[in-house]
Image (cartoon, rainbow, N blue to C red; front, side, top):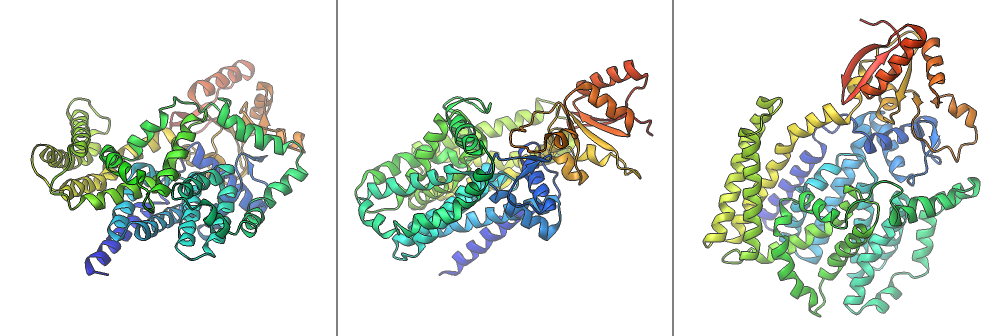
Length: 549
């Protein structure tokens, strides 16, 4: 291997560590998803019950437990902290990058692997959610690893097929059937496309492989179904069929929803997709044995499935980022020797670069910004870089510019993109997505006060308090609880129950200002005492029934 490629590997590795692990434990847990996963893992960790996930003390069967188990390992190393919650998440992101590089190298070559891995690292969707705790990054890891094992098996290392089945089981323990669907959507159509279905299926341990999958994937499900009446119907109907076929989960969106997510989440590389699709289509249609069909189906079929599903979240297409990045990296590798950039590539890149540059200019000089000086110091150098990118893209459209020039300019733009969003992300976290400032404003007292979430399910509150909280009129699922009276002691349903608590001990309430004010008015009317407002942050308010300085 040449010295330049070793240097490229080292630089890419250093960049990956920097983007994934820098300030990983500084940022507060974000509501609602990240905080819910972190809190559920915390409750499992503290109770020592690794079988039954609990959220706010209630059995929580929305997701399989593997994400919680991995997060608990982080707590064991770093304590119940933000770093503990996210450490193995960022490590999983690093593993996904390593697997992407390996797949690119064995399927397309060293340079394509470097390009594809760099593209994946610099996409906003992957870069963001490799630092925010959800199940989707772990699902991405296990599906990517399973497909990498399939590739290793096809290249002559037959025992790797057993690893493929084992990792498919891990994906099932991460997010249920969708992991198996993602893997099958890549593997089976690619074998059909290359005319190798029968030959390869016989090599993929058709008996031992599924048996290994069952051993890994099903024992936890079977154990809980046997001891929990109604749980099987809940998983099959409510959490699977209803999620795909109905809007009961209130996560619907138009059929083109993920086109927008991909355009923004894969930016700036999504601007190259029109040119890549045209050139790659002829290769895909050819009958020669190539790896392109594997990555093509890995991306396309799940993308269609997610688009047709009635339940949509931004992170659903995170497992599709590795194949998209590798297909684009392989195409760029072939294009680097071109004497000039083709128009179908130059036009979208030019349009996108100028659109972003003009939007930044308008943000700086047209619309006044809160905290403008701090944000302006980030935006001005970013605008300079994006203008340079736009100029290079324009030259590629009007004159003869090598493809490597526009790729280099886009890489630089991609590198400064985290700098662009950093001040906005920090401000959004402070004002909209975290409860940490409110919890830190609750004083330590000789007798621990009751903390009540008022018509609000904020999982980061018990996480930062380190103890259970009360909830008032919060939606919850009690159908699998055995001891309802004990559970309901901490989950208040009526205003009278809340007022009784307010008159019996020191209480701190967290909720939206209008909810707190409503309780305050009723409290004042019945007892003559008003609540003391302590702090308002993140669009929520902290109040207490005690006088406080």
